[in-house]
Amino acid sequence: MKKIFLIILLFLVFMMPSFAKQQENNQKYIKNNLTYLNLEWWQNYNDEILIEHLKKLFESNYDLKNALLKVKESEKLAKIQLINELPSLRTDSFVSRDFRSSVQRFGDMEIPNFSQSNFQFPLTMSYEVDIWGKNRLKTKSAKKDLEIVNQAQRASYIRITSEFCALYFNLIKTDKLLEIQNELINIQSEIVKKVELKNEAGLCPIEDVLNEQKYLTVLKEEKNNLEEKQDVIINNLKVYLTTDSAIKRNSYEGVIIPDKIPLEISSEIIEKRPDYIQQEANIERAGYDVKIARREMLPQFVIFGQIGLNAYRLSNLFNTPSHLANAGVMPSFDFFFAGRKLNFLQFKKYQYEEAINNYRKTILEDIKEVNLGLFGYKTAVKNYEESVERLKRQNKIFSLLKDKKSIGSASDLDILYGKEADLTVKKEEVSNKINCLISTISLYKSVGGINLYKLTEDI
Image (cartoon, rainbow, N blue to C red; front, side, top):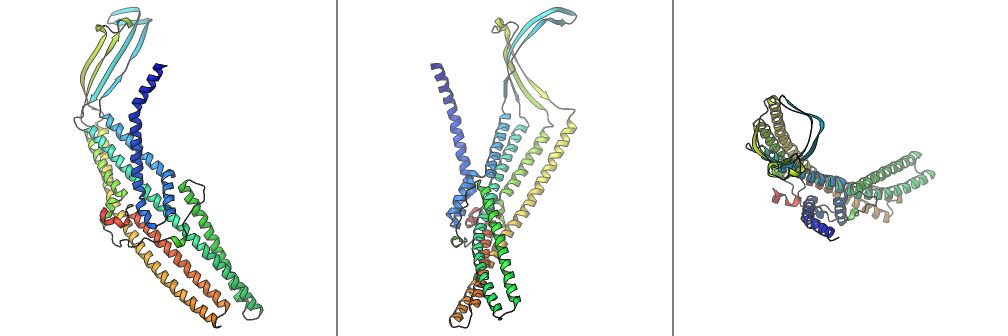
């Protein structure tokens, strides 16, 4: 019992550093991923419900989990390559028995009915001397792969959080539009009733009634489309959050648009985008691969050594004559695979040229995306400002209409038409406000997930 307890204790002692290292790595991953989540930027929307959703997204979204697993996989591949630079130490032990039916020959001499045992326990070490630096280059190439995967994870965070937040604000917009749409349907229903009464009294033609009824069906159709859009958005948000619970959201009145966002952005900002950094790392990796392919054509030198025990009787295994030892240097060169290696080198050169072209293309695409994000934001701001002014004027028109009603120069039907016009303009203002807000998200995404208020600091 004491021996079992001692074994368990020793196991725990040896495993504790591994557990501690794993916990340290987990904390590192959490810190990096929270940085990619960039809650500091999303706080600018002053929406605590949105922040809670983003935290839930961080914990449960499968795409983000897979992005982290890709990073861990790449880290292991980099470590495997680093280990490949170290000497190899192994044992190829075996026990064999030649039975009497065997025949042993030594030149012309034949030993019939030969039988014997062989016990061999060698310890073999080999090391490829990295004279040309090939193995070191392979490790550098693996580290560049890791950098590319890290940036791919960052890009996943930027894309998924931006898409989620845009959907969230579109849901708020749809809620408000549905609210206005229901008001419009109620008002139009009242208008239809009043016009029908006018028609019955002979004060308007039947065409007026039919037109008002037709417009009512249009409003109901718009409501159906909005309800479908609302359901689709809610379903998409649930998929992002991997939940079946109701999606909480802020009211439209609680939504604010981050203001004082820079209207001019230096093109140098693209250097912070994950795809730009990926392409830079890809060029370096392709360059390493070309050097590796070139050095594969050079001779290899392997130092090897062996020490162990070799005996034909188990009783003699630890005697001095049974000791086994040898050492040497083994140069090798593939004479008949030179063509394959030359073609492989040319293949890697083509990949390097392709990486350069992709890098140049990425620069152009990134500048275009930043400019489009900036143009879209400027236009959205102008459209929202115009819709606010239009709504103010419509409110004044409706206010004057109510004044006319109070003095008897406007009818109830006129008030209903005025209210309907007021709500129609309000719908435009709601759409433009949320579109303006979503344009800030698009701009944030285009600059590589950098806090737009810190652009000058991060360039």
